[in-house]
Image (cartoon, rainbow, N blue to C red; front, side, top):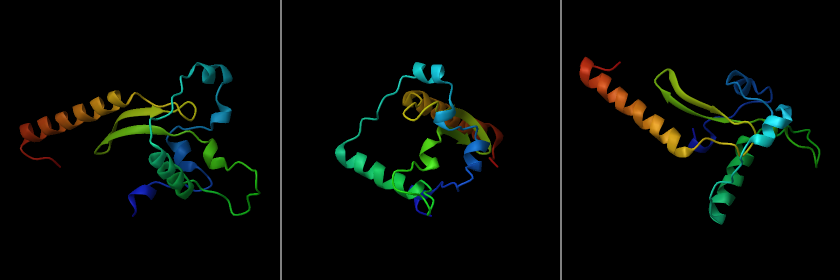
Length: 127
């Protein structure tokens, strides 16, 4: 599978719902106002790459009319750090553009990797 299309949901958005995500137009307006949104620091080429990928992974109904907003762009996403079957970190975006501090995510991932290595060394095997 092409890594750029690793996760694509269908029009039911069941995977989003199962992960606890919601549509940003359903978020409490006062809560949304408190969110500090920042755009990622991307070059022009990186922005073009981003937009080309979004078009490939966002489900757009075949019967959609020009000017309609596809429901897929209304859903928020999130960030996960997974170790084996365990979710060791989850961030749920409140609105698009709301994302975790990347250093925090990297630190959690590093800590999980270190703990895995410590378990592997202490048990003699890792399954």
